[in-house]
Length: 451
Image (tube, rainbow, N blue to C red):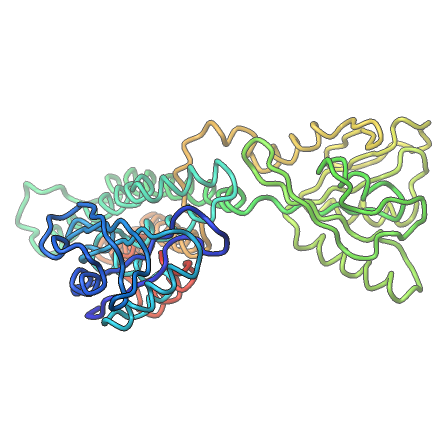
């Protein structure tokens, strides 16, 4: 990290009032001083703002405000300079070009945050939380990300690691210094409560973190059923817009149609599929196969049945299929006379009418209840939130479960220490106490340029 990096940190896709060009590294202040007209800037105090012009030789490029922040009290813990110039991409890019000429190098995506991590300013979990904060699509996702950035989730992990360290320390003392009778003697009886406490905490983290992915990315909801039962009408009613084409002709929907809403802070991503039935039409058959694949991949399925028709063979096959999945049955067209016999199913049945907008609120509520998300807005959203973190938490839980199992078999405590240490290391990988360079590179490549 001997280089000084520079990049535009604001969105240059549109025209705005200002753009910010960020520079970080040991030569940041000197490089900027070569193109900035304010003579007091080079020796100014940290965390001060300076007025002047950016010049290319005698040519004025822009009138700017420049913020100077000296190491170590900066985002990267290096010297950082932020040039506030006028909006639009032309001016910002010209300033960036001058900085490169004077010795800075282009920043890679996420490199400012990567340097913050490598310099000890933030840990890996906090770094990933910053990415999630930038990409948050709803209020709950923002709350969850800010808890990661502020260190609340880190403390959750650190507290568990401290309990494991305390346990390991007592085990080591018992093994290496048995003559110290004042130390706690580790036995099957006194180790069990601590292990149980750690196990329960990890189980809670894993369970709630699985749902956190749905807070972050939303719930993918497949709307399925045979043709002409009202799937597209249901999508349009839920979205409150005419997203899908609706006709009385069976098989109108040949491809998937998608749309999202935010309900009680959770994104619901609805996917309208082609009607599922036996068909010889080649194009329709492709749509049917795609519908079946989407049903397999969705978080939950809404099976739409027509209240005005008897259950068909195609309906029955879909009813059997949904029994093995998370699903809800929506009986549509209750504004018409019923010809539908009693349905044998373990799934929740909601009666409604897309024409009359009936049953839609109950349907959305049931989706949240299926994932225990109906009151997420009122919970402390201190969870892990990506596959890497959750996988490591699951590995730590497996380690602890193995320790508990072995302890019940009266395995010597020095053997138990191996799995406890593995659990401790797995939790350490979540916050970056232990990491592989390639992993870190891949994480920060996902960040936007300038962050």
